[in-house]
Length: 480
Ligand SMILES: Cc1ncc(COP(=O)(O)O)c(C=O)c1O
Image (cartoon, rainbow, N blue to C red; front, side):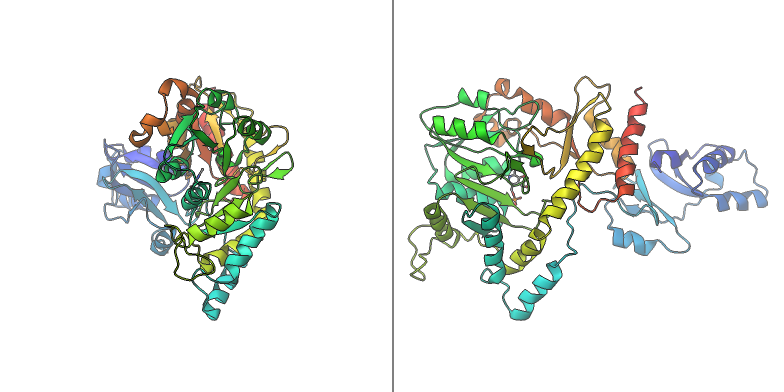
C-alpha cells in the first residue's frame, strides 16, 4: 500500500481518520505535520479507547494520537526491521534524517524490491568452504584455474585471465595491447565511468562518441568523424546487456585498422549472430560486481584473441614478474589477481549462467508486455540476430510524455520499488568534459535524462513483478 494513502494531518478530525482507516484496512495511520514530518501514529485501538473515555469524533487527531511510537531510519536493514516487528508493533514508519515520513514496513511488506540482488544459493557455500578447508584462500588455487577455463570454453577457446574487478580488467586489456600516451581510443559517451577511466589510466586519450537512439550503443556513423591518425582502438560497450552490432563494428575496425576492446561488463550471456559477446574483439572484459549477471563480490575477467597478448597480460597481472624467473620483473606491472575464494563463488555462479539469463529474459518479457502498450515508453532494443541478456531492464520515458522520468522513479519508490536512473553522459562530468563536444553527444544526453532501470534480480517473484507492473499502470492512469 502506498504510504501517501496512510497519512493523515495532525489537525484533521478523528472522524476523517476513521474514514481513512476504513478505506485502507491496515489498522494504522501515520500522522504528519504541515512539513510532512511524522508526529504520531494512530491505530483503530487508539480511537476506540478515546471514544470510550468520552472523546468525540470531532476532536482533532492530535488529542488521541500516540506520540510514543517506534520509527526507524529508511536505510535500516530488513533484518533489524524484522527484529523490531513483534506482537505489539506490527507496522513501523520509516523516516529520513529530518524525520520526514518516507515509507513503512510491516511483516507483509518487509522487502523493498531491489534493482539487482545476487542469488547465491547454488554451490557457492560448498566451494568457498572447500577453499577454507583446504587452506587455498589466496590467488593460487584450483577455482581460479577452473573459472578461467570456463570462460575460455565459453569464448571459443580464447585464453582468459581472472582479475580483481571489471575496471582493472579494462586497464589490463589496454596495457596488454600497448595502448598508451599519444593514442586515442573511441568510447561511447553513455557508459559507466570505468570504461573511460581505464583509458585515462594508460595515458591515452578517450574520444567520446554518441550512441544510437534505438540500441543505446556506440554510433559508428558519428565515430567515423572522430577518427584521427592517432586513433588506435575502439571500445564498444554492450550497454545493459544489449549487444552492439558487431558485424558493422568489426568491419569499421578493420577498415580503419583499429584494435577492439569489448567492454562486456554488463553483457555476460548476450549473443550477436550466434556468437557470444567477447568473441569479436582483440580483447574483451567482464565485471563480477555484486549486481552483475554473475558475481564474485568484486571480480573481473579478461578474454584474449591472441595468446601472446594474454601471456603478457598474465605477467602484468602479477607485478610484471616473469613466469619462469621468480622475483624477476620484466616490466612494471600490477597486482590485479582474483582470489581463489572469489573464483569459487564465480564457478558456482557460472554453473547457473543459462538459468540466470533465461530468468532475466523472462523478466524483460513481462516488462515488455506491460510497457509496450504504453505510448509514453520506449522499450529496450533487441535487433534481429541479437540476444539481449537484459542485465538490467532499462527503458526510456519518451521526452514528450506528460511526466518526467524522475516522477515515475519517485512514485515507484513509494511503492517499495527500487529503480536506477541511466548513467550521466560522460561529457557532462568535470573530469571528462574535454573529451567530447556537447553538440555531438545529444542522444546520450537525452537517454541519460529519460532512461531508467527496473528491478531485474533473477529471483524476482511473480508477485513482485506483478506489483511493479501494476504500480507503473497505476502511475500512468493519472495521465489518461
Ligand atoms: C560498462 C561497465 N564497464 C566497466 C565496469 C567496471 O566493473 P567493476 O565495477 O567490476 O570495476 C562496469 C561496472 O560496473 C560497467 O558497467
